[in-house]
Image (cartoon, rainbow, N blue to C red; front, side, top):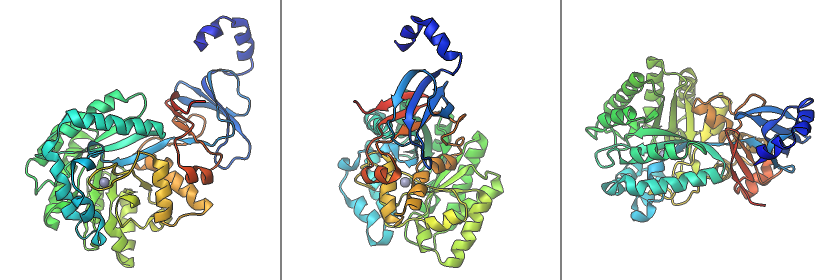
Length: 421
Ligand SMILES: [Zn+2]
């Protein structure tokens, strides 16, 4: 429609374009982090083409009216095949996962697995769609999504996520992780299913070595998943040491294997809650190892009682970011795929409440989450991808206070969500 009206007045358009560019989309009067003056953001072919005040005409305008504009949200960790399954179960897994300093986390995984007796893509897929619609509403444009792969889940979760990945390709990138939640050694056949999932199009090789019965089995688990990743040239995301036991060592095993395999920068460690119980000297050793392996860490402080030592990791220059983790499943009753809400919760759980802290927390759900996943730089600058949110707030203080949906969400230069009026 806008193109049609433009063609009706070619002389006017020609006179405009003689002095200024024209754009597919322009965000007018945007406030950006750290800048005192408002700016326009001109977008062409999915990329930010220009940023300065009073840009020329565009096919479509969004008036930010002084609202804060930033890169969009990235969710590096979501069990997307399990969303909204809490009501299919009792609350025993919740009790086990959240109680007694996570001493019964292992039991929680066994209790939660009961839902998989009924796994079928036909009921999983509508839940996945709901969670991805919420992602779009809340400005999440990239999700690393885990699907369980084992003898009960088979490839039902993977199939549902692959289908949703195609359906939502315009609004949100879904990276599918083939995740052997029940283990590889203790769950015969799981490794073959992970390989099959990758052959069918899963993007990332998962793992959960700490679930195995012994350090030797944990090493075998890691080795088997690395073999699949190297054979298929895939990145790796593993859940490690997700309990309150400082003797768990699979984060260390994962980092060492990353270096041995030459997979530096392509491996993400998730959860690692046992780090909260490490003594100072072991923590120092592990941080040095994470640096050498260029291992990124995803922490989810709202879904369990313990979390990684975020400040120590940041001080060492390790990429550490936040994930949604769960949405109303056996492990966590809440969640609406709102990474600003996740950052708001983390602000309390880490006691990071100053302006500087909010800047870091916001990076953890935008720039740093993208960096952890090996995505191109996720920054607001000319030449960068036009994956943006116009927040319903002038600054991060107000954004955290309200943590509601953005005013507008732009993905690859297209407006994919906007508040009416
Ligand atoms: Zn998780």
